[in-house]
Length: 293
Image (cartoon, rainbow, N blue to C red; front, side):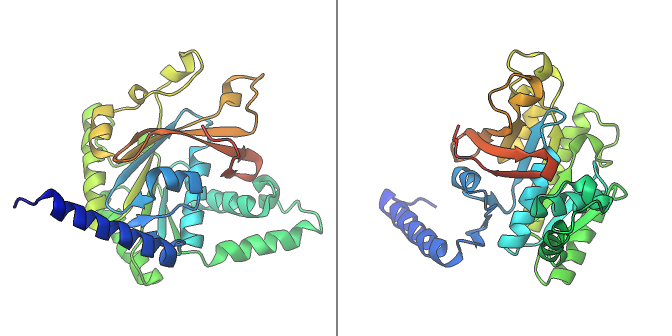
């Protein structure tokens, strides 16, 4: 089928108008299959997380990948009311719950876990528990060892939540028991399978990945795409590839203390760039920064 510029332009204008109406009516939920994270700089750069896509969130050890992914999971389930499934291969679900409570109460998770709270903090924790208790946010742990099991969990979530999940988080690639040997070829095959899973289930799959230690030896320690395993497959199949970077982790004299950068290195059909966040590790929380990279 061949179409003229005029016909394509008409369709584009109609879609723009649909976006405008959707933005007014559904700005807190989902627009044309793209799920808002409610981290507004991220949403502006990606236009939201697209159903049917694979997103890679990478970084060196200690950058806060799990915390960032958990913040995304909370925002999407709490504000967009879209079910999120979190596969915690790196941390058991109970530890993730403590992190969620810390992020919402701004009380350190260690003190929550051991009930070492002041009298004034107990009501604050109660409010955090109320905020977290009924979220459409579901967890599974490393006992899940196949994509078939994950698909069964997605069906179960739809039955419990009354609607299909919108986001699946897998934390993290190097710990997934879904490859035969962990070889480059197996990882490439897994990347393709996850993209197919995303398309079949109409879900956004967020895959956390550990960057190779080469960044630790590089001047400035900034991550590169080549720090990732099976990068050719990731570039071919992932819609977004982003790195978390914290200068203060490497540099004791850093002028960026309490800051984190999300470096978007690939962003299909959208711009690449850096988004700055304030990072409070003691509260397992990222928040919008006044600074824009």
